[in-house]
Image (cartoon, rainbow, N blue to C red; front, side, top):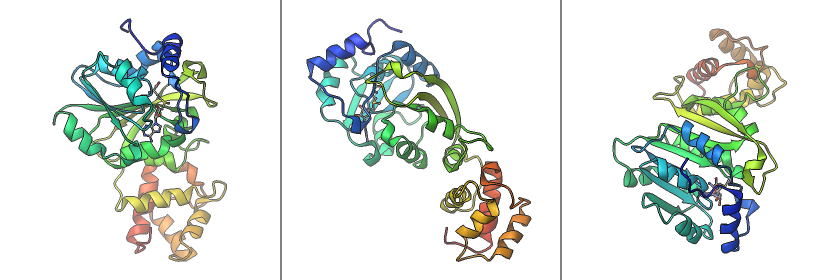
Length: 295
Ligand code: SAM
């Protein structure tokens, strides 16, 4: 790790004092103050001097600086206007960083990628995400099918565990299936609260999502599939069959539901949490093809 870095408690305090900056809890502002964690994130994010990086929420630039050092070009979206002059100061030595003052949820990331990176350039998303909107941000970035290879993100441990979960575990749910439809998910490391300023209330993990060339399963209609998966986890203690009866009460009678379950060889007495993604896909396809299109 190069000598110069923003991510120490002393330097961070210096910068915050210089600009009399006060943290906004509502924007999930927990800045990284530990160089070792940054080094680990960089190591796992798959970046080198040929790659482009999209960052969400640069803060005062702790992670941005390391990305600028190790990648070809960094484009970072920051919502808090007060941070713009600070970033201009802290990142003044790097001419390969561009800050865009915008809410990531409103941003046209595809257009930004086409405008800032080469057509063949490998692109990675790296971020210490604002925890209040972790899931909406990740789902937006995945659903848009951006030309990126990986997303390496610091998020709440509990959410990271859900995204990387296996069937038949407490963490497994509709979010797991949605994320693993697009990516291969792995928790890289768990991170103590002490690496942040101020310290968050929850534990954190670094999660790496590697985008699949093709979704992990073939489904006839994606929206229908995601809605059905959600319904199967609707009441976790209920059987799959009962959750389906509830969900399809306007569309299919109980006998038809039993028949369709039999057609894909899935026992309706099981719980939703025991189905793997292939079984969910088979289930969604058989119900969809049986004529229901309401999703
Ligand atoms: N990257 C810095 C670090 O690691 O020290 C800061 C990370 S902090 C957890 C999250 C950052 O995201 C803050 O700078 C916050 O202002 C910014 N942010 C919050 N909501 C945002 C949004 N909707 N769009 C873009 N940035 C956002």
